[in-house]
Length: 116
Image (cartoon, rainbow, N blue to C red; front, side, top):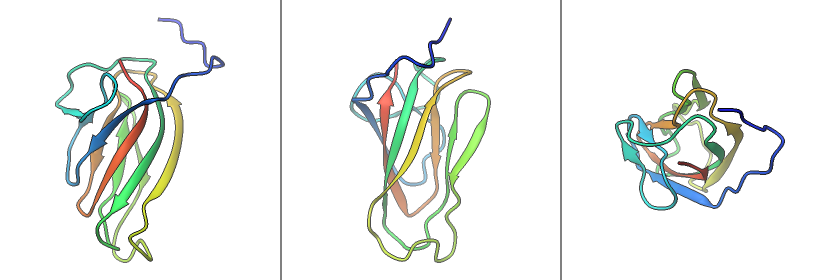
């Protein structure tokens, strides 16, 4: 599949991911993420994450594009000063397969992008 990396991508889809979730697959548009690898594909666009912490010492957040795992938030003891939601910009197209997200305890998130 040829991917045009310069073409604007609609990022109006979203998926919610609960705390302490392993491998939530970003599929379709809207609604909850499906755990376990159903759907999603190479070329899916992950624009940004809106993170809602419930503790100032939350766990980490990692994204995986089917092959490469990237820690986008390390978390840990006193990692945050307050419980204010924050955004993590991503802006990546998946090079290898469906996006999956793993969250630690003490935070949930909304993954905004375009998923198949």
